[in-house]
Amino acid sequence: MKETPSILVTGATGLVGSHLVDRLVREGRFVRALVRPSSRLTWLTPHVQRGRAEIVTGDLSDAGLIDRICRNVDTVYHTAAAVDFSLGEAVVRSVNIDAVRILAASVLKNRVRRMIHLSSIGACRWGSEPIDESTPLEAVNVYEATKMEGDRFLLAAHERQGLPVVVLAPSAIYGPRARIVIPEMLWYLRKGWMPLVDGGRRRLNMVHVSDVVEAMILAARVPKAVGRRFLIGHTESPTFRRIFEVMAGCLGISPPFWSVPGWAALPAARLLTRLEWLRAPFPLDEYMEYATRDAVLDISRARKVLGYEPRVNLAEGMASTIEWFVRQSPEWTGFEVLETV
Ligand SMILES: NC(=O)c1ccc[n+]([C@@H]2O[C@H](COP(=O)([O-])OP(=O)(O)OC[C@H]3O[C@@H](n4cnc5c(N)ncnc54)[C@H](OP(=O)(O)O)[C@@H]3O)[C@@H](O)[C@H]2O)c1
Image 1 (tube, rainbow, N blue to C red):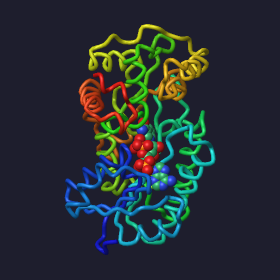
Image 2 (image 1 turned 90 degrees about the vertical axis):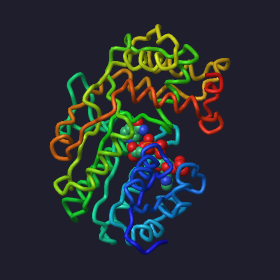
Image 3 (image 1 turned 45 degrees about the vertical axis):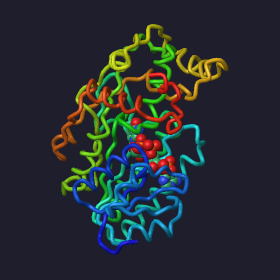
């Protein structure tokens, strides 16, 4: 490992982590990237070849390794997480809670200047009213519960031990390289099997990955951000109907026309996923869970304290995202429908 002070990015092969590394390297920073033995290094390798990044292979649960990679590091961006519900509770808890504790201890021990932690708005109680940082936390699934516990632990560690952490809680993140949300939406849309829930009237705040990266960079710079939690999203929270209209427009297909009532959403998702002939590669449970609630955001705190302004609107962000998916080779995403686009 290099001895020069650098930046540590966990989850460097994921949606946010990989875009963050691209941005940091563009700004002339040297990045240390934590990856797993099984991680795909497609986007990291060019940076390593140009001497702008180094790769450390291992798992977040390895306390000795985490301690070593936090040495000579100025800023830790913690984007790694278990975001897939199907991994099971033990895995999700170990990545989203235990590993957060390990990383926080290493940050303190190695006197890292700042730790930027990515949480999720999923940990807030959603409703028809806009949510902000004062909205009570309330998790409806194990992923959100673990993100909520991670936030609480980190903010308490700031209070008790002076952990220099900033917690950012983004809404649904989309963009090229997305592994969740966009792939399943695209797949069911293309097949003509994407159901609306309650006529698609619920709202979902979606934020482009480049805006999340911008918020992370600001959070690392602004002194007043330390010890605080910020919701990160867009100023607009479109309805699901609008989101699908935009996506369908990009694909040149009709938007979804059939709808299930909220109470039937989960059973319908499970039925669709099990239909043998549909051969659905993605479960729809997560989408259905979100499509029955409103996620409307008030991002005033991030705007005021961080100077954050979302720049990418849904129409342009979705167009470039879908274009990227369409260009991708199917073996990378398991997204075989794109071969025919
Ligand atoms: N995507 C969203 O809509 C969304 C919304 C709100 C908040 N967030 C939060 O934003 C953050 C980034 O999400 P994302 O969408 O970028 O996730 P992602 O694309 O699924 O990437 C997750 C990253 O974490 C790594 N990882 C997982 N388990 C690990 C372990 N045990 N040890 C080391 N690395 C591990 C993965 O490595 P591999 O490449 O090896 O799998 C991958 O690089 C997460 O904290 C997530 O909770 C995401």
